[in-house]
Picture 1: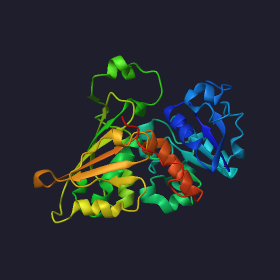
Picture 2: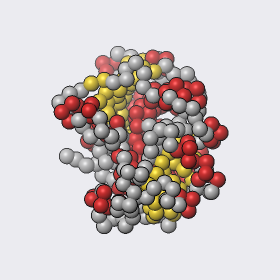
Picture 3: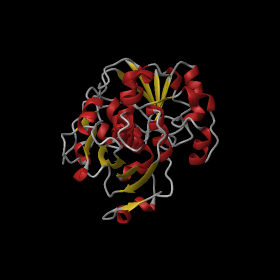
Picture 4: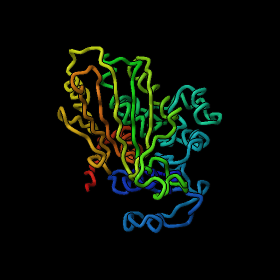
Length: 343
């Protein structure tokens, strides 16, 4: 059994990691850190895990993470970059679920995250953890940057079109909606039910930090410079992302449905729905799936792709487990055979 540590176990991504890892057949969670509840039993804090795990939260200093085979960082931005080097030197592999190693351009990273990077030498080594693009590199990686939730949904939706040169890459639009868990587990007036319930709003329209991540990922994957208008919205639900993606076609003769089906035929966690199907977030709730629907409405030359994921699973913890499976040479879907929670 591989020994696994989780740094930051009391956030939503940390709790989702625990939900997935306690049933994984090849790993044992041996350390979960939290400064705020150190000493508290994990199953006492997360009662849904009663009988699943016999472990208490510990401080980072007491966790003995160097004894682990792999450590997940489910922490705020700026944490993993200060801790990863020591673990890597000790032979521990690292998956960061925050943004510390996602962007290769450190000037862009500094602009969007408001701090100097503490480990620039590791940024170039880090592999961006989107298996549908970087599967081989992930398998050999010591350090994986787990993608953001919005970038996962948007990238998977646009990738086949850009790879085929079927759309005008300079005029892409991503109109994306997320449940409130995407904002993290923190006290915030804007996230109170009385504030966000029965309402629907945009935010960060002038600029969102996931926009440069999407652009960089698509450009690295396709070699095409991308122009992207990205508008995020907050929905009054807990889980889920729906991305409505718009791209002008430049090759009218392309069979887009066949293009998507061929691109993702062998991908265990991307499901291309039959032509004309509608997508809904509840069809992926609690799963590691991305479901896609493609359409050219009224033959008007504008491609519309709808992409849905669970932001806490394929958008975070599930994709991190998928990456872990690749890093250790296990079947990619191990521990991730999950059915959607519906209703």
